[in-house]
Image (tube, rainbow, N blue to C red; front, side, top):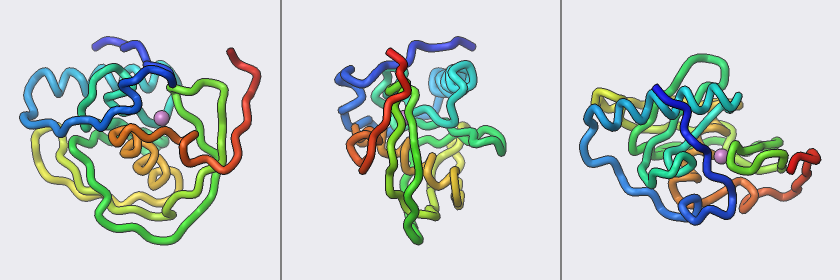
Length: 153
Ligand code: CO
């Protein structure tokens, strides 16, 4: 496993629409491992493949309830609305208030190519939406209604 370099805002890969994963092979499973290690090393709760320089529809999330790996994720149902503060490993030192769905159902493939369906509430719902946005080239600062910086470079 390896800790990968996290691309920062301004890198054009973060604005691209990521490609679906056509075949889940050893290379994809290694990428999932590396992405998880990179997320944990950076103290993040989520990471999308474009953030490590690969324009593929792959996301890892851990909001404290264990690692979630999503390949080709799609939001299939939504409920409610909630505004809260958000940050991003690609935009260090910046927080912003973003309105998101309060609950979302996500369908995806797991690392074995099996179809999975997950319901996210609270922070997990927010993480699903934030990370899936990355696959569409959308950053939270594109949606934020307020932005604050914490004095980091
Ligand atoms: Co992000």
